[in-house]
Image 1 (cartoon, rainbow, N blue to C red):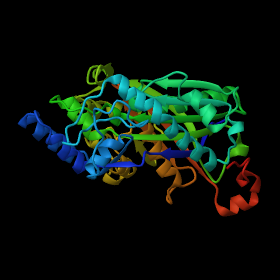
Image 2 (cartoon, rainbow, N blue to C red; image 1 turned 180 degrees about the vertical axis):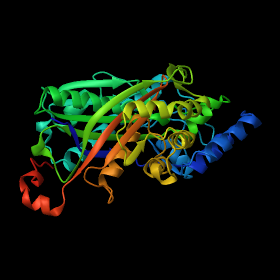
Image 3 (cartoon, rainbow, N blue to C red; image 1 turned 180 degrees about the horizontal axis):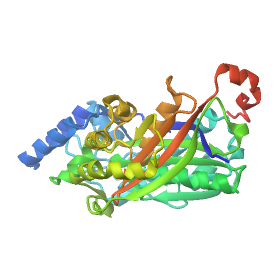
Image 4 (cartoon, rainbow, N blue to C red; image 1 turned 60 degrees about the vertical axis):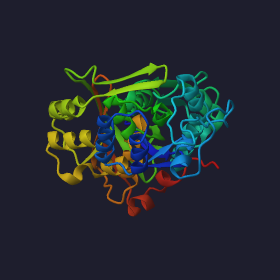
Length: 397
């Protein structure tokens, strides 16, 4: 029995951050050195990002000239974290305040992405047997897995699991866990939901790692419905064929994610793209074992990462177009990003039956997580001959 992705849903906060406006704001902060100003402009301009989404409505409002909330306000509206004052000075809220905003705003993103995925798969929430939530940008208990049960009306008996602090690569282990669940329980319907609020941890600093993080990371959520039951297939799906994990020989200190007093602290050194570029060929060859690849879905940790993967694997310029498009329009949303890319491929006009998709993401360690997927596409003739496969199993509104 092969587990498959039946559908993928995505969600982003409505507030948009134009990359050039955020660049100018960070570069204009008082006290920042001239060297850091140059680093800010260089990092933002080289990012290949045009827009990102954020739950920081205060920041988005300020960039649009609508003013910012009074930082002295002791009781800001729920979900609104004061991060900028009326003079354009970026503030540094404590970790607790940032996490409070995560608690207030993340559950809605988890739920929105999950609802879209369930609707696209014609799966009733009552049919979900397992929930896997993923996040590394906030924490609370009862957590997002529990909230999904309440917000979506899932059975209270659903099995719940949460993968935390795995970073950008975490969606792939979540899919792997879902596939294992489906293998053990053929009737299982697994809901995987990733949500990350990376912008909660923005801060102004002369540290190049913090500057790079501020130029790349964004907020978003994505969900996938996984089942091995062939009766649940729709017109398109992605079979989960195989998985692999590889840890690089070095890089343990080059990509880290720790909790500080002024937010979570990201280390993302300039060595990361170089390490990936140096080791990607051996890691991918070992994973594929000679299997052919038609399409690549690579997590765009940043423009330099995508460039190094392309060069290291000897891929043509158009091979990573889907990854570059998601990076351009949404930035790096950590674990949710790879599902945005897979959604664009699953819904794309060019998807072919039997098309193989190599999916690769990178996380702290430095770790590569990979999955080989095979697309399934029913043509109209096949759908007419086998109407049972295209009839919705259940519907909900």
